Length: 182
Image (tube, rainbow, N blue to C red; front, top):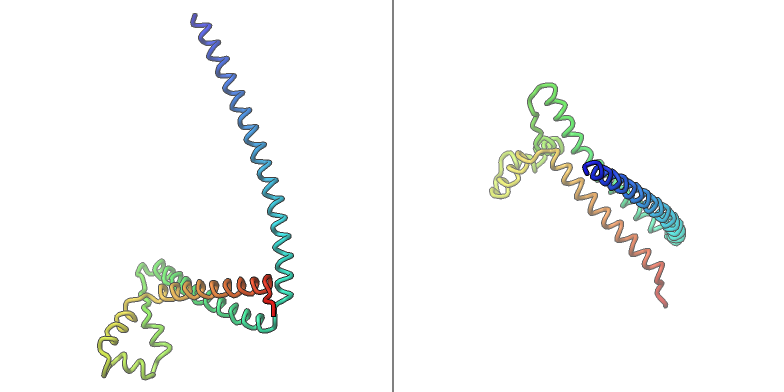
């Protein structure tokens, strides 16, 4: 009786293994079919996008290219500010690895560099009015890290410039697709 239970178990185990292999084979065929379908759709979408892009750029005016160039320059500069914040953090990390002490680089260091000898720096050192504003500005310049200020300002500028460029491009695309009848 035990021998028959073992053969039943073996038959059931062999049947299960065959079912699992059949399932895996079907799943593989399904995924391969999905991959081929995706490749075909992506190829068609890319071809249509390239066709639309060629038609779109052909209709742009010189003024569009001027403003596009200005926007690209603003995007590049924003990216440089963002990357400089990351660079300042990397520099601080290298100094920390070398010395074992984290070097503080507050926003005040950059402020002093750019506004040395100006009326603004004189007001910051010895205010004669606007005392509340002086306290706020002094606290921010002394406590906000330079790296955080660069990363935040650069990231915000990248977001804003990219958004404006996308909206302008979308608006011009809409204008070309739906010309006004005059």
